Image (tube, rainbow, N blue to C red; front, top):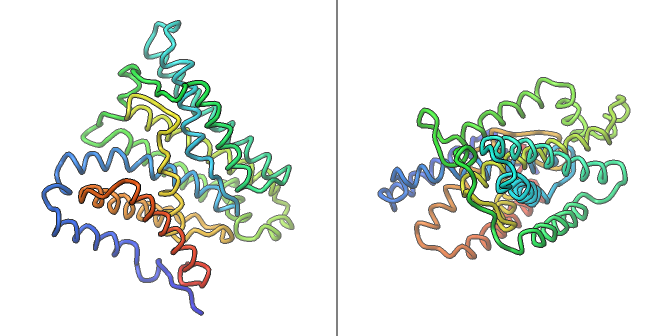
Length: 318
């Protein structure tokens, strides 16, 4: 049976356009209000970055279900060690140290997960579920279930303010997307990542160190999760173990909807962005209609099952 191709018939952009027109007809005042549009563009980068972090392990034939917990864990530790540490008088220094720590620590967590998956051979699904449980347990012990809040303006500006009218989180996302696109398209490590995902055996015969490539892929995924931690904690001016809990299911649906498979070695970043936009518009529209948040999670779960079913019978592909 011939595979259904999003790329050939431009399914995703058309579906996004249909959504926007539908909401324009039903809720033109509330959905297209300035406040709602701004809120969407401030939240969209977080969901997109989580999806990007997940995609980076998908392309090497693995999966990282700990992307959200890595973001929360690194954010909580940074908040405790630096952002709310009164021993450091300089507020700007607290913010800078926090950002550096988050990116380094999240990369380290990704590297550790990648090492265990690639070199020890533990199942990526089981490992990242276990890692998530460990991170959440440590966060719960550190915070006692409460959020850590009241950061300096030099920090929360990254999540709340605009630059030339553009939300700073959106600018951070654009820079990150450019970096990841360049990395995958124009560097050796990026090409190796795609080769390994496309045909692991052929990549091995070509002399590519598959274990190292997978480990580095997890490390980059962890770094992207670190950016999520920065933007998310800055936007809320606080961080909690529960922040971003619903993002994982969004990311799974977005990656699946974009046509990215575990065995193709393809990073369809444009499709991924459009998929995230579709889901973000969809969830925002349902919220405007007063739908219970738990029902939205049910719908997202059903979407994952439907997409996986379609992939199984080759209705969705490239």
